[in-house]
Amino acid sequence: MNAANPADRITATVRADIRVLTAYPVPPAADGIKLDAMECPYALPDAVRDDIARAVRETALNRYPPGDPTALANEVRQAFGIPPQAGLLFGNGSDELIHLIVQACCQPGDTVLSPWPSFVYFDMAARFDHARFVGVPLTADLQLDLPAMLQAIAQHRPKVVFLALPNNPTGGLWPDAAVQAILDAAPGLVVLDEAYQPFAGHSWMPRLPELPHAVVLRTVSKIGLAGLRFGYLAGHPDWIAEFDKVRPPYNLNVLTQAALRAVLRHKPVLDGQAARLRADREPLADSLAALPGVTVYRSAANFVLARFSGKPGGNAVHLALKTRKILVKNVAGAHPLLADCLRISVGTPDENRALLSALQDILSSN
Ligand SMILES: *Cc1c(COP(=O)(O)O)cnc(C)c1O
Image (cartoon, rainbow, N blue to C red; front, top):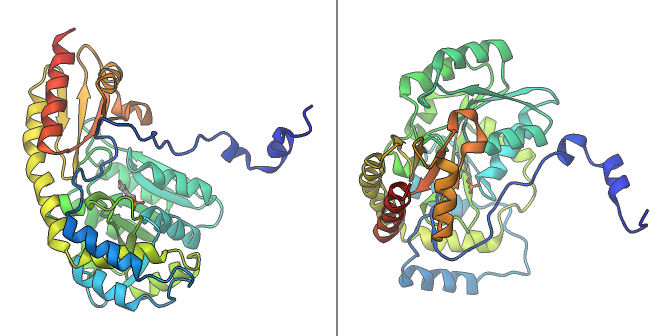
């Protein structure tokens, strides 16, 4: 055997459940129209970029990030309407905060539960942190199955329940009464993941002070700052203090902090971009629904899920779009309920038009 080949040592050393995994798929950057990752299609205006440049220039890179990010915390509270009573924790993306929650709550074998399909990282983080993940299937029309959720909560007694509100990849926003029933039934913590809240016009954040066993998770990734890697978690200070204990020191780098503070001085720019995407969502959904063989699921997020059950089906449509340099996400392989489904981010008006005309072409040429 080649002495430089570590295969045997890896087999003997790395966890078997990690070896069988494939890494989270991040497609290579490609030119063309990118509608596959729920990014904001709009670049920041020059005035904001100038402020970011100035803030970065004044940042001392030879020092560790400050231990007490009070100034940033005040600005984040102000910008995102976080109740004054709530504690606040920052993460290198909200993905990191998902890990911290599972690490702090779960002994090996404890259960993490979520409606399913939902955000794949709930499942991944649970497994990496030795928890057991239980996904409770949505209904055939991709809605929350509340009786099944309540039954699963009673059966598995999950330490942590994750609810993506709106849900990714289906786009639906679970009704308040159903979420409240889950909050009432869950024996542990309920994480309300509001990654797409700016597009939903709905939030649990103002009700947080009356929810002692829930935390609200947010990110700036979907509102134009995906490259920054910043997420925040709000909840009762006693919950937050526990999660803070497993946070890697200095997890939030100084450049992210400096750039975020500069951008938040221009918060109306972010709000305007979100409002634009929200206004463009229904026309896009309606146009997609008018195509032959296409079912569109109503979305409260910055993307729509569409099922291509005619000829050609979802996989072929995905490839045909790719050939035309239009990237959307094929989620068919993620769950049987998502057969033939493509998840499409709302783009600029030009991008949406290009997508629709390509789809018309693809669906009529068959
Ligand atoms: C995109 C997404 C996130 C992850 O956001 P990052 O802050 O970029 O890590 C979290 N939750 C849901 C439901 C998402 O779709």
